[in-house]
Length: 321
Image (tube, rainbow, N blue to C red; front, side):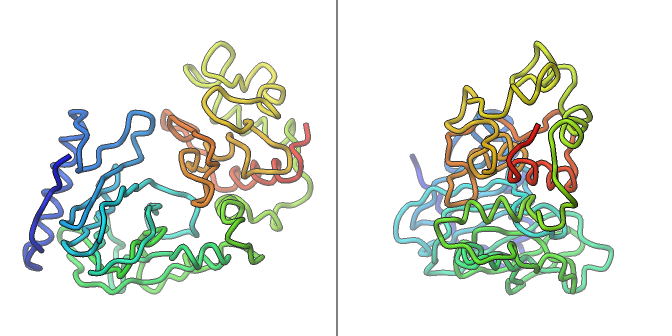
């Protein structure tokens, strides 16, 4: 596979280069061309992959919001980079993205976030969460050094001395995204549990026990029971006829863990589909179960953060009927 070589762009023209790269990436992926540019694989259009080596290269998120520019000389060996949106880290302005591998660099990377900026962009900055912090239970957003804030083109560019686990955008002095990911301190082996707790955990704030019939069924009814979705005779699992029997302890066709494992959201495929971590390895907060396809729900429906908390609490409490 050819390596895309380029020289470091001049700062004055960097915004134009990023916009050109985003447009080119969109056209390539629309034409189903896979290459070093990192078009999304067929099983999940939101996951983007690219192989980048010592000569440098770039990878953009599926929506073109996040672009990671690896400069020549930053890497000793070729690496496969993966970018996917993630609900795992704390709240932040706009979407957040999970990136792998999280590695040190010999030359700082340039990280560009291209999206509608706040009404007052003063202090807006690209932010990152380091893997070691996240694994230690302290997933705090860190503001990266800003090298360019282009209000007209709505681009914020920063530098990072490593490839961080998560990237997002902090709005001015807003510190809503700088809370700890967990109330306890997990070990490195439990990073997957930490990710799930942060993404929908907050279980200490959930009032009382949660059961499937009164608390979870209304969520399925409002988001998952529709034409072409999880109604009877449509996509599996059937969340209409007897949803409890269809998911609790039942193995899906495309993953190596049950839809719901009572007491353990980390090994519950249904939870990972909702949290959009179903295709990730366990050490990155995913199920490590060979998951595929799109996150749930699809087709434009959404599950609120409150409902996600309820689903997580239901599974964690034992998935009572």
